Image (tube, rainbow, N blue to C red; front, top):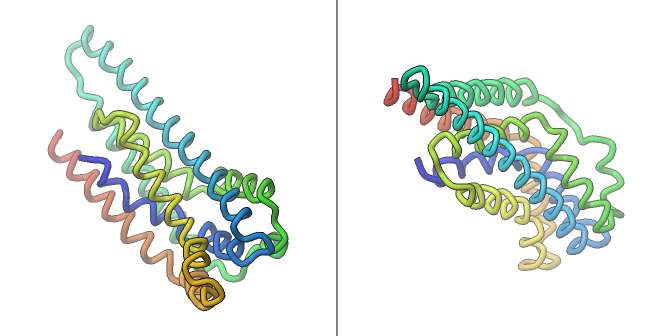
Length: 217
């Protein structure tokens, strides 16, 4: 496994409300400043989230290794794989249950007048309170740590997630007044069809985890 394996889950992180919020911020009174604040808050939380999961698995793995030296060699890798698989199954269930949610949250109405500080708090809070994002951060951090990869292997996932969130801002910067149509299409896609892509990507990563279990079984 390499850090490339977890990158598809970055799409699942942003597809849905997160991308919709990024689109609205790119259409707000202060689109550049508000979007940058949102990206900063999101990037901070995602970095902390995957890092905490990575550290916990490394700690548990270290304790298990010490115990196995005393009681005989026991590979903790399959156990971590099972935990990751359980997280992915839970994630797939949550995505499925939320697939038919229609309409936009009422708090989106205030985004049009967002300032950078408010947007930063929103970016941080949105990724903390969203169950799917919490599950993904836990799965990514645990999977990277389980395969003995160093911490910096988490950074491409974080950077790709933030880059995907920045697409509405990039569209605004590149297209100017013509960006309205592109932003509308991005919002409609995120609101209506993102869950299908999410389930496919979750299934892909789950298959890779199962293959790891088979190889180490």
